[in-house]
Image (cartoon, rainbow, N blue to C red; front, top):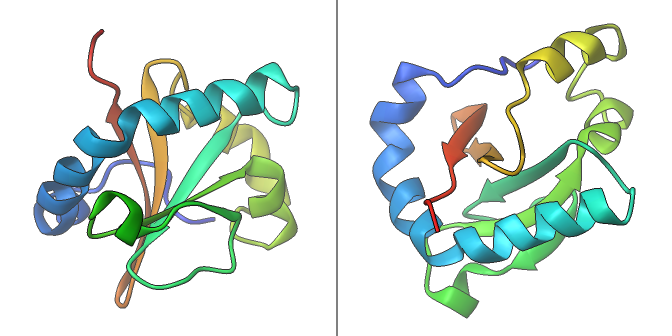
Length: 125
């Protein structure tokens, strides 16, 4: 299973660009997470982000739309299990570490040398 903890290396290398983007897109991501839960699609929304096209999830926000460094897709835990990104036998462990989607955005950061989950708190309204 890919590590489900915020990683200091990830934070150091990516936190600046991810956070800068996140401020611009957080409301859209929060609404998408809400819709995935409200429509009973998944209790565990995940937003894969990458600077190139990804085959994970569906494109929600291309980087050109909001002039961000990252493309934002939307997905959920079941797809990650189906694709083998989260081992089926680690599903319960993932759910235990997963943070409240009303308070935190679960990003799946994919870059050339790095692939990690990252949780970023939504700004307070």
